[in-house]
Length: 272
Ligand SMILES: C[S@@+](CC[C@H](N)C(=O)[O-])C[C@H]1O[C@@H](n2cnc3c(N)ncnc32)[C@H](O)[C@@H]1O
View 1 (cartoon, helix red, strand yellow):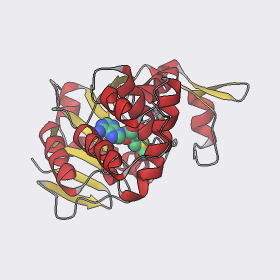
View 2 (cartoon, helix red, strand yellow):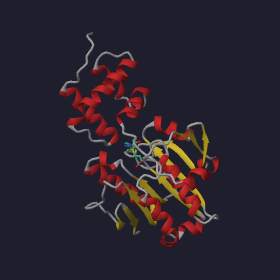
View 3 (cartoon, protein in one colour):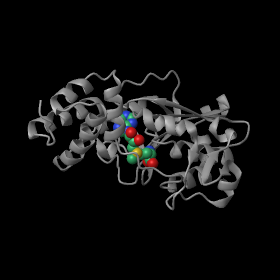
View 4 (cartoon, protein in one colour):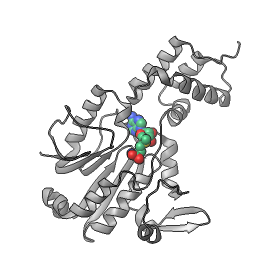
């Protein structure tokens, strides 16, 4: 069979529908070339010469073809202390957060979910901030998940080459990182606060206990309004009354607040 280099419109639509169905991600027409080039690269690695054959392979969500397609089709941009208004909010309002949600003191535990955590920068930032500002008798438990197993593996390594967009102040850098050459390694006291897992936000939530804070930042932009709406309802049901939802700066719950109350841009509270 001849090697195929160009994705036809019909083939693009099949890939687009699959991504929408399985990941909730809406791929606009402008993403056709991106899908084509990523698929071609993965096909080359797997020695597959035509898009239809490759499509059939990735349709099976349980195989490694699908997993590596997911790793490549998703956007993983993230940084430490990204959108730091959320971390400043926790720093400045930790006592009101605990007053609004008595479960934290009652259980001596704060449970946080970084729900599209990419390489872990967000989860470790949360861990450092909570470690610094939550009273020491409260246990910090952070679950960090992402649909891409590649980024979860990187997050578990906890080793970073920092760039200019990582806005880590020298105090945190010195206290919670160990510098080895040009690599910054997260110290165990922070690393041990976070559990990483692969998880698709489109799946039903399997959690036994509710969360006190959920971060869902810079992923809903890839979902269409119906998918966002369903996800926000699911978040509502696993957030304890008085719990907080943080979303990305270009995202909004307007028209879709469900029973969340707006506190500040991108910060919402579950009113129970
Ligand atoms: C742009 S990153 C955002 C990372 C971090 N929350 C932040 O704001 O810096 C978006 C992440 O969402 C993940 N993602 C995309 N679709 C997902 C889904 N259906 N379920 C879980 N994670 C998903 C991607 O793999 C990617 O790592």
